[in-house]
Image (cartoon, rainbow, N blue to C red):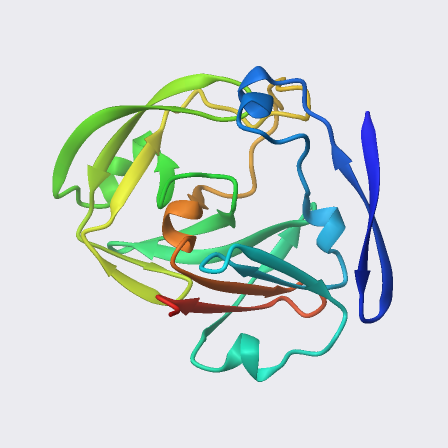
Length: 207
């Protein structure tokens, strides 16, 4: 099922569809749906995590997005934004996922390649479909959206984890990415993604 809504913007009306997901965890958190990449297509999207606002516009880039920001490029795979990052000496293709609560997620088999500094205790977590436990480690360095991090915490995903569809059923095809950049990293800045050009701008620690 889908719900339809309209947003007023300078260029006119934006019409989109939002998935309704049958998940107790999802609804107990106070949400009724999800906005995906197809909503952002052919637009500039600005996620201001500091002020808790999202702007969708067809206007050109301005100094608000670019001034003091780190520029990076991204590609789209099924309307999902993918970029490159490095952890230690390893380079990965990463999904930019505002719905992931972790700083960075990698497949568990990669832990031996990225030079783990120390192990942390496992944590209980959940998404809109299920609850699970996550192994966490500290790594020496990472470069995410052009920002250098020292000793970031990385969550390790079990090798048998799968992507899921809107009903929470496993999607039995390989993901086009091996890492996930989540809200744990994005929460202190402004992320601008220009879906028209594949240019992104990250302004960390925005005040």
